[in-house]
Length: 601
Image 1 (cartoon, rainbow, N blue to C red):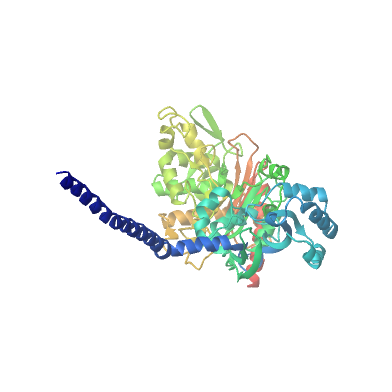
Image 2: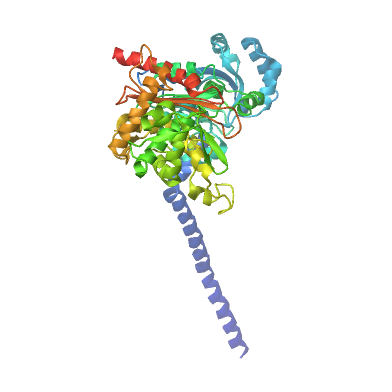
């Protein structure tokens, strides 16, 4: 019995020993299989990814910025280009604290720089590109040459070229052209996938922003092989940058110059010159203005920024795209409302008086007596207030709003830089019932005084100089609402999607044209006549500033009459004395230059 029992235990032990190799082999096979699977995954499936990571550790791309496309006027003259500037840098990974003093002193000696300033610049740390530190900017040719002669003894330092935006005419057309600035970190995060670099500059305002993708080009760079310490081993080659495309604008340099000269003695204001047939902007001037070259500086102090951005005169603010009370230039809109409503047909005659009472106020005519019984043409010619009070009040606020909307008021014009543009205001009874934008619905009803003021472009009506130019283009071109633009882009600007027919009766258009012509031939706009001025139509305007400042001066005109080829709107901000005294001479200077060029062919 005992033997039998021993034999059973021995058999059990031998059976377990026989299974152990199989278990070990199984474990080895599983382990090897896992390793093989992992290697297959890393080398086959993820191989390209890890090769890319390895290359990123081994290869550094020193970026080279592209040259931004030029901005040209309609005749090919340069309005914005690029210029080269040289800067001094160090690569921190090649210059430690122990080697810096010797390098600093050598750089100061060779380039005649202040050692203390070099210390200060180095102390700011690496630039936004993450691999170098700027020590000096705008090196002159002699400094660049001296550095290159001594470059072998200046290890860790380099002189590189930067490409900066340059505006050869300074402040000229600054609000239209805009400017570019270094990209922000938030913008970089959003735009890195589109090829932007942390050292990039991006169009911030004006045409520079509107046509950013057309102008910017593509980055290139120098490929360098580095070791694990980040030390450069060799140059692997260059990838050239791709320059941006030039952009030809509709602006005329000659007209832009004279427009800004006409604004020179004004506190503030704007001039818009436009082709009424297509909407092409020939001049867009605003005062006060600024020099866009300011934003091309590599180093700018906080004090300099404050002088521009905190300036109470607001030089960055485009008056051409901001809304103001239009005064009597609005009377052509009221005339359209009266005729189109059917309540005051083109041949109507109304008695004008010293003043007419609406609500609790007697609204006067500007001459204190009235102009007798007159029709639309003479009412525009004399700029009779009491005539247009009757037309506006009799037609009603909705009729006036309808006419204004047909002429493009109350909304953006469609110009490429529209994010800077005010939509203005054309108040009516529905707007008042809704709270006028600042009160509770039903608490600010439309009153007779509102309608009287709206009839002559005061208080509840505010428009931009660009909107007024667009509206008068309808009268100049025979009834088409155009889209203002600063670049043709090879598009047909008379196509239906860019130019639409205004719902205005031929008789209405003819009567307004007749009145605008009388304003210039024998009315408040008579001062426009003279040598070098073709037959023209127009309207003067003097507007009370609803914000409490001095009066504004306006003049809107088009020529030749009756089918215009140019519309000019001149606006003098807070310049009391009348549109015929201040704004008309501004427009006349632009008209003279335009007509001289037209006659030369």
